[in-house]
Amino acid sequence: MVVQITVIMPAFNEEEGIGPVLRAMTESPSFGPDVEIIVAANGCTDRTAAVARSCGARVLEIATPSKIAALNAADEIAGGDVRIYLDADIAVSVELLRALAAVIAEPGVEAAAPRPVIDTSASTWPVRAYYAINARLPIFSGRLFGRGLIAISAAARARFTNFPDIIADDMFLDAVVRADEKRDVDLPVRVVAPRRTGELVRRVARSRAGNAEFWEFVRTDPRGAELALDPVPGSRPWSWLRRVVLTAPHLVPAAFCYVAITVAAELRRRSPGWSVRSGWGRTTAGVPTGGPADPHSAVDASGAGPSGR
Image (cartoon, rainbow, N blue to C red; front, side, top):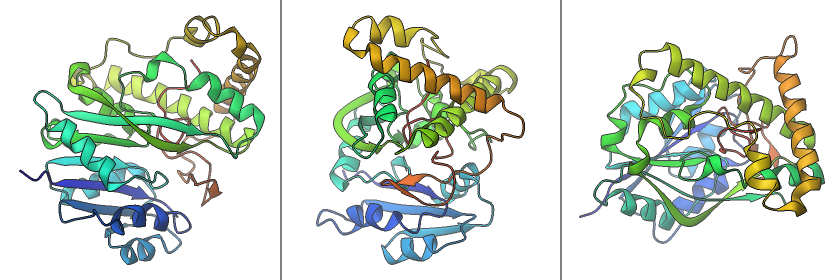
């Protein structure tokens, strides 16, 4: 039986980077009718929609620059057996999409995600030091965030009506599916880190705000009470020390950068006039494309879940 895959890609001012990402799929010899790509161009002031159409994607144009509005609008017209939510700066192959779908087709599996490989090759040394710690945090094990790509079954998607209006859509999806229903797939996906320290601080500040907003949603919204939260919920304040640095003493110098960036991000988050919803542009393949370097989700590596822990 052929598994029908729908890729949902929200995009905000991604003209410069979305073409190569889409062509990696649509121009592949293995691309076929079992894969549909929906690009939800939201609030764009550039040629994102036109570029996406030229690459063979089905395009929705939404006036409001909102990732959540884009996800919900795309979901309304999406079908298929598996839905793959993909950030517009994450290039993947058709083979990876099908591998994720094949895992979800197994009995008892409702969601899957590939192995993230954080690319810091174009980053400054403080950014590289930060990710030397962050990429090893235990919070990412067995979770769906941290990849910029989440695949879920149609049955899992039917568990909720719409994405709630929170930044951490990836944490929400992770909590929709029980721990025993998730699978890590040992295939790599490249996640580009910010180039500069200032970009990383903005990203981590947004991530921390998104984390806090998600847990407030869990506490106060009736929908939050229905989520299948994993046994390791929320932050573990000293896991970076106990589970990472103390087991790998050579990372002590990197830990100083990690702590400094985390503190700077928290101070920025608490600073007067700072807004977590000040746009959700991202850095695509290292090229700034319209706003802060964070992809409107609670991530610190273009899809990397809780940060600063």
